[in-house]
Figure 1: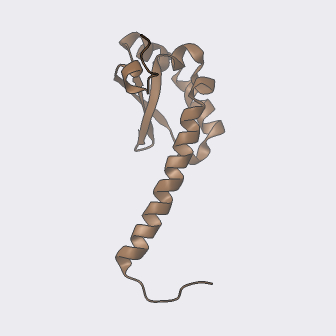
Figure 2: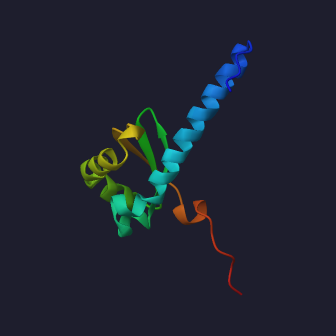
Length: 111
């Protein structure tokens, strides 16, 4: 049964943005889980998708050499993203250097 009571604008906006943010986070999570399939195992081992800003995917890599390889494959990567995840509306890539091994969750250290 629907609730027809008068609601505050802030309540309506909060509900709208929470639902949209949840959906976007779910879509991006699914996208991140297929990163290796999109870029290939070698590139995936040295890079991570970080987020989307103004329709550009921010990618971190652990060395500038890997960024160069990602740039060489940019058209292929964008085509695969557009085909598999058109709802993300990604039309460009941006890169940053970051130690991807430190940024990803690690297993417990071995003694």
